[in-house]
Length: 128
Image (cartoon, rainbow, N blue to C red; front, side, top):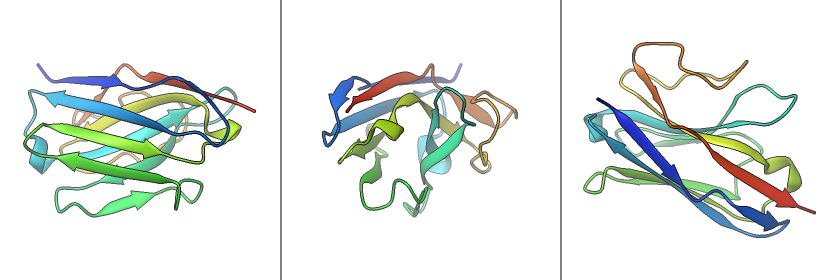
């Protein structure tokens, strides 16, 4: 059974920082693509940041320069360091692992392919 265990969501003031953590169990970690997705009320599921087996990364425009995604193959863990947080960064953040490619996002944040594995989500609230 594959499990993604997330932590780190919290309430912070605008301008503050948070680090989200996701430990992946039961999956060949170093071969999978990993990503953090955000779902906020009234908005579609958005791929915020992704990291791949070669450690290359992808960021949404809104995250560039403020968020950093990283991974440690020995710990089977991927992190999302978020800085200079804005109220619009708030939402439920989901950790996703995919054995093929990361889903593009859109619609609701939920599993849509057999190759995808989703965490339970962690809430990030940013107060202005």
